[in-house]
Image 1 (cartoon, rainbow, N blue to C red):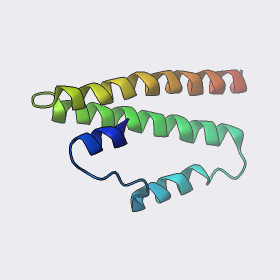
Image 2 (image 1 turned 60 degrees about the vertical axis):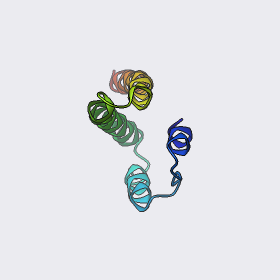
Image 3 (image 1 turned 180 degrees about the horizontal axis):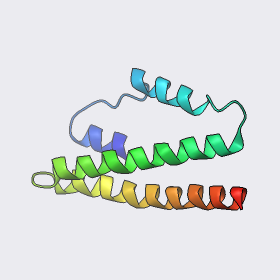
Image 4 (image 1 turned 30 degrees about the horizontal axis):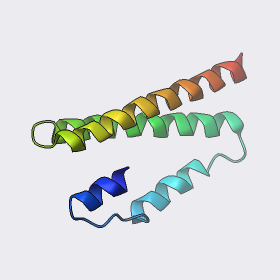
Length: 93
């Protein structure tokens, strides 16, 4: 969805930005601990929500279509955070 919008605006999506690799490595640094991994994923989901909210603020006045995309992403990420929290709650009983 993001890549399509970047193309519509005349840009070229970058599917391998350098900072992405460091974030992936952080998720793999859980030493096989299930709860740590789920908690790390929950934190990542929350970060995406916060970033998407910033994007909405940036696009709100001038780019309605660009603004709709992070709104959609937030709905997805909120569902993911709820799933992650449910998993943690069930795991810790």
